[in-house]
Length: 358
Image 1 (cartoon, one colour):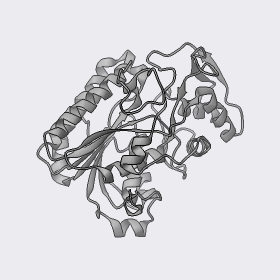
Image 2 (cartoon, rainbow, N blue to C red; image 1 turned 90 degrees about the vertical axis):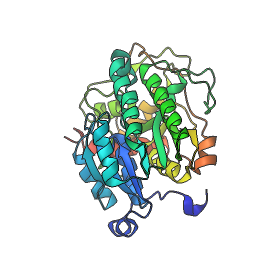
Image 3 (cartoon, rainbow, N blue to C red; image 1 turned 135 degrees about the vertical axis):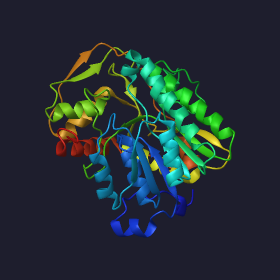
């Protein structure tokens, strides 16, 4: 990718944002108020796109929209709706005429999906089919999907490439794979291109500390749980198993800074070609154990984060991290931020917002 085509990695100032408004067209972002969606909206606005966001605030807060505008220098257009409401989505498409879609809206907790699989199929697959129905016959020419490395299951070899066999071991992973296939089938029938982005473990926050991850209830992911312990909201971090075949017995994952991930979505929009739908891993290519992350988070916080070992969690793979060669080749993108950056920025968010957006 040429230097001119690379996504801008800086948040736009108000003056810059105003001068570039709409120069790249309008992007419909589902789940726009969510953790990854909100960071991506800021990157899109900073790169001259208009954004129309939709969200039902099932796992997000309205104040996020104000903070997006504050950080980007201009607001997104927004409509509150459930992704499964096809008619409401169709009205948004008619009213705003997006030329691109980035689809984040969905449920994302592996453990919860084991307990409530029907809910995950309804939202993640039913919602995707609803969206595809709503954009049929529209001017949408680019579609980027927020998929997951969980589609690989518990791979026999790492790092995983995009050709690693898919074998999801949780309902969450199976719904992501089903959604991928529905999108690929849809794009194959029309003059539309895009990417299915299988990303790994997003952590961190905007460096300002103004937006970040604010899960409802007890966090299902490691970093927000650890940071809530550090800020005093919870007594101790639960580490799910220490008897895996790894150096310290805990699971190994590929943790990626959420801003790097957001910039990867902008890069995907810019690299998409008509009548092409490709799968791309977004990660760092490096694996870190649960205890590696706990230690790094403790360093960022300045005090040890207490934890306890509990039983393994259903649906968790032992080791998984990405081969990111394809992302570099097709998108001209790579993750630049380190685990130190991830923990520092996540702590900036949590320490400034000890109770989240409340």
